[in-house]
Image (cartoon, helix red, strand yellow):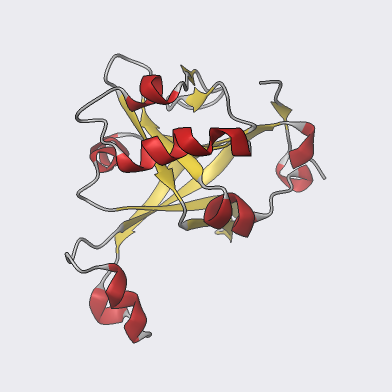
Length: 175
């Protein structure tokens, strides 16, 4: 994939389409053998907090990627064209505990430019993030009763905030 460095102020992403519609791939860990894992994400956000460009991701403690998020100092978010929908479906429904799901999905981890967590070669967009904060979802803080319906197993997510240190993308992501 032909990606170029994009500055934060030139970055353009329709976030509701990218996460809610097309999904993204969250990768944490390092390129060392069995040193990383990826999972499809459709919840999260991008914004500014503490004067930093921020990516927000949520991971349930039951997910294999949770271990990597806890141990790692960084993560990437990768976006793909619609032709990778099946690959993202596989990465969201199979566990890295049981298989090399990136290989099975036809995806290739590659070194990132600024962080230890790998990006994905086939991605149109890679956000490189350094973890700066995490916290657990606390059900007693829900202000809308319908939220609890997302947690029938009481496996509440952990929020991770990552400072976006680098963005590589195709020209479609540049404003």
